[in-house]
Image: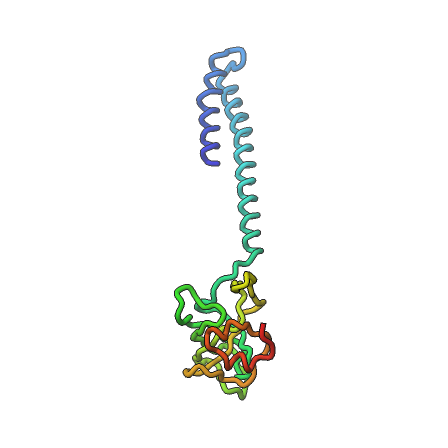
Length: 193
């Protein structure tokens, strides 16, 4: 757009002014050449301003569309997750995804910090625990061609030996946990998806 405006300014200053000066009937004085220059610039600047506004509105529409469609990504550092067992924690934040460069997916183990906890539970606020991701909003493909994804990111807290801290798991849990050797979580779950 800037190039177009500079080109228009070049046309007005180099072509319209000499034309008016070469024809004395059209331009009797320097005031008429100034008038032609002002009219030409106002017309072309309006064109440049409209094109600039068009580009801005297109850019805003594209940004709004990208914001409307939220990108689902890996579970990474500082991701907030819901705890779906009865260990006493309500929400945790991911500190680190183990065995993954980009982040954690379904069935992966993460290190997390407890952000909200119920009073009198086994887990207190501020403690650091391991957790297994049992629900993820990022779609994951299955062998049969289908894919599984959930509405939220959820985790089950485990101890250093890989055993769940809680005694119940709420909500659906995918059967991919069997491949990751989390059979105990599957046995505690209400529903296997």
